[in-house]
View: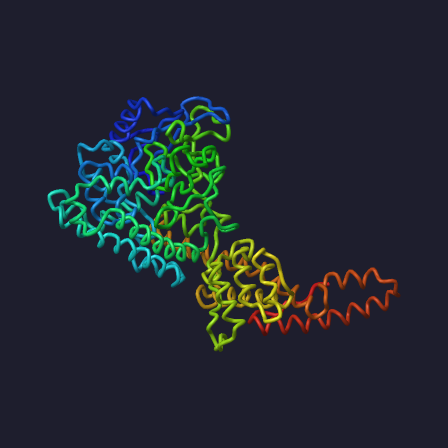
Length: 566
């Protein structure tokens, strides 16, 4: 872990953390049943100050203490700039964070002082570090993400260069912007804003007429264009999200599954790291007399200092009535126990990508599998059937990479491949596939044959069928070591999924050749009302035939022949 960088020996706190805690204690609308203490190797964490029962409110933090996009637009200096320039949420929030951290008079100066100074996320991997990933696909994802962040920074140049008196060039560099984005990505919550829908338009409408004219268009038109751009960005980012192995809100692939909190998409980018799905379930409907608020980023001081736990020991939400972030205990705590949040049900790749750490033996590990190209080998050939199938896949988001898990194929992957391998006769039944049902043994045979071949090919060409731990010889905790952890995770998923998919593929071979599985046939022979010598003869004949099928299976998938079990 490198999220916590302050503090010395066990139990000691830095002056910055002590000053931050004093500042929080001075706030009349903040209450907490824990304090922050140094927990050794993991850094600072939340420690219960008394015994706590299930259901008690662990912490309540008022909305005005959050660092949000709304607060950025209300800033007396930055607000007019944000109203004038058409910036995305990430640009606004990162510039807002940097401004507060650079301002010694900032309202949030004590909070800014305890933010981590460095990160070990994939954004900071060098080319040498990425050599330990094993997969070119992963390296390309890291470069694309970094390029996207750089584009956001370059898009801020008209604001930065046009106001040098506000933004000193040495304080607003790309490295600082990258740091601010990692603060946002690793520590922010995504919540339903208590502000009514359309607040940006109203704030922009408050600009002087001269400012509106300088902006080149009316605030209404600017807002419409911003919404259109946000929609385009959302579509692009959705494609990127769904390509990754533990795409959020996916069954079996590490989604945002915080206890009782419904998933809320982060505006304009991937789901925020730590708690990307805070919403008010008890007040999910529209507030009478107002439109429902939009999703927005929020840095919540104190709440974001709780460490991660995969056990889901706390439940959190935004309470509109109290206008506060509320976190409740889902288990009892003794005085001195560490209180933790479940940041997310992410796999190793996304944990390192967002936070710079990874859990051992992560059950949410996944690997993204590409869907075979519809246009390969002249598949379309002006075929109405193939064009219809291609459109169907596009409409349901089935053309993107889908995840393999440690338990085998995910429902999304199975659905995408079943549609991909539908033949003319099966296509009218595509509705069953979209419901997660099988249409035929032949269709599933093609699906699992592809999965078996793909897993074997990846293990052979990318990982060299190596059993060696990729982290051997690397300094624990280094960037290269984290990259190697991703390599180990991906390889383990491929090996585990291969075992599951290969078993199912063999069963489908038997179903197609015999009409039922080999196990059932052998059971039938054993229970048949015939002489023992006849049973032995039937069993021997069947096993000889099954060995031939296994040999055919091995030739088709490039694997070793495995003798049929009797």
